[in-house]
Image 1 (tube, rainbow, N blue to C red):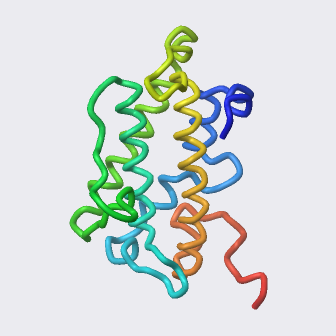
Image 2: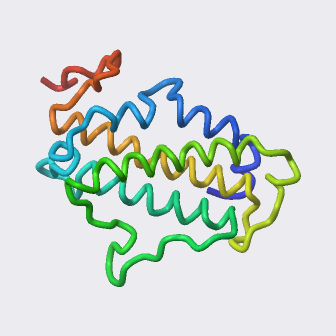
Amino acid sequence: MNRESLSQFGPAAAVRIHSLGEEYQPPANLLSDLSPEQALEVPPGSPYSIADVLAHVVFWQELWLALIEGREGPRPAEGKNADWPRVTPEEWGPLFEQFVSGQELAWSLAETGEAELSRLLESGFTVGEQILRLTQHNNYHFGQVALLRQMLGLWPTAAGDDAWEESLHA
């Protein structure tokens, strides 16, 4: 996402739309009703599970929030796909909670004043731009989570009300 695109949309609005899901299921709804076994299942034809996607989202969310707050963030493991950490069934619940906590922090950071949102970070982005990057990244991957749920037959969510209950090509 380029700087011009980032400046067209305010961070607080972006986080609000992402968190509350105006036109789609909010991320928390896509995750909260899944058992660890469901979250870790890899559907046929997919390279990853919902848990894999969430671990990737949390890795980058934590890294970018740490950058904004000036603290040490997570370090990727060595090798290919290092920013896609493996998840065990025992880690699913804490991973979900970590995601939700990160979203709450992003929301509070997005609602800070213009001086803080304009602060330039080591990444070369401002705080506001970094929050927008985080939100855009999360939105991309939560589209994948919705599709994975459908592939696994876990649609609609417990919160319901999306119309994609049947295949368009049945």
